[in-house]
Length: 201
Image (cartoon, rainbow, N blue to C red; front, side):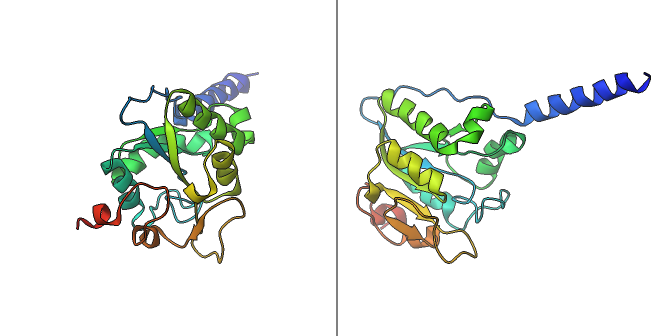
């Protein structure tokens, strides 16, 4: 019986540790009248080289996201990362010089079990609050499904190839990109961001 209180204490500490690692739900604000355009970015495998490389940023990823932010777009970071690793996201974004944006992550087991449905629900909330989604970037089939189901046209959905892979994950997308550097060199239909703005010409 003497070991039971210690076991209970250990379990309690573990629960507190896990709960402290989760990010709280981010409230979706109503879109302002003249600045109502938003761009969606997955994080793991999209802004990072692979889904598991969560401490590394892809080359030029921050610059690509900032190009949209500097042009007045609302930035939405939408990740299905597990609760135990969510708390590091804001610090990681800041440390790698990504612009400010709204961060949305799963809040319960239901969200985690169906990433596409979770992401669609968040995007539908943005649309209901007056935001217009103009582009979505992801690396997984669930990203592409969520963007499509939320109403993004194929020419506004972009796939990022994982480092070391030969192709992008299957799904509905306009272009499979090898890197963010490749994206910054071109102008795609529907993005609304000019090359001259990116390169300061």
